[in-house]
Amino acid sequence: MEASQAIPTTRDWRVVMLLRSVGRADVHQLVERVRSEIAVWGQDLAATGTEVIVGYAGGPDERGPHEGIPESDYDVAAEAVLPGRPDTTTVTKAVVAFVQQLAPLLSAEGSMVAVAREKLFDDRRTRLKYLHPLVRQPHLTHAEFIENWEKNVGPVVAAHHPTRVGYVALQCDDELTTAATEACGFGGGVPDGFGVEWFASTHDMIPAFEWAVSPGSADGGPEPEPAGLLALLGRYADLSAPTAILGIEPNPTH
Image 1: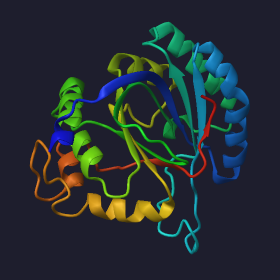
Image 2: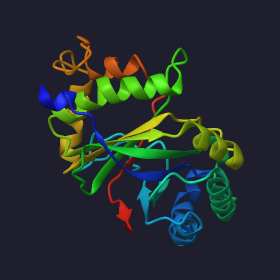
Image 3: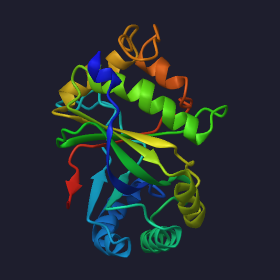
Image 4: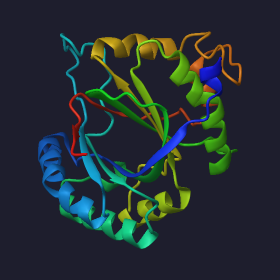
């Protein structure tokens, strides 16, 4: 298919922080602290915009419009949009200062930070944003992971996902992401990329997740995988400990 072969265009750079609170009782305070401090963080990075994404947390017996939607693994995400690749000193100083403002509400061991560049596969954005970090398989280099993800996985998602509205890949800068992770003392892992998906409603998310694990969902892509899209992604990404954040109400300022 023509859409599956298209090489995505490049847009903004982003600094992404996926944050966990030290305990469930501290989630609300952490979210409010992030909201109150993100403007200063954006200024420190010379960002053109910022965004706060509050993680969705549903009860075990929840009924209603979000029933069946997985809870977020992170409590809140903070994103800063940059016009170009930042330097290491600027990034590390900014993220460390931001983390210091969030302590002692923040669990450094469970949090993650990345510096990444956007690749636009399908740029249609809505109020439901699903952001999931990806860590490469150990036999791959960062460059090999990015190449395979961009050529073989992203086009399949963009061309065939039945109820997804938009899809963007954030391809991490390995040097800057590692430096920022070490500077913050975060223990949540060093991501190689993020898949970012938008949905018109939570009703659309469940069939999309079911489709991704079904045989045939990767048909028509550059690299055949009869077992489906998730199995195709698993060739390149370590899926042993999947983590993601779902923002029911993202709060963009850009």
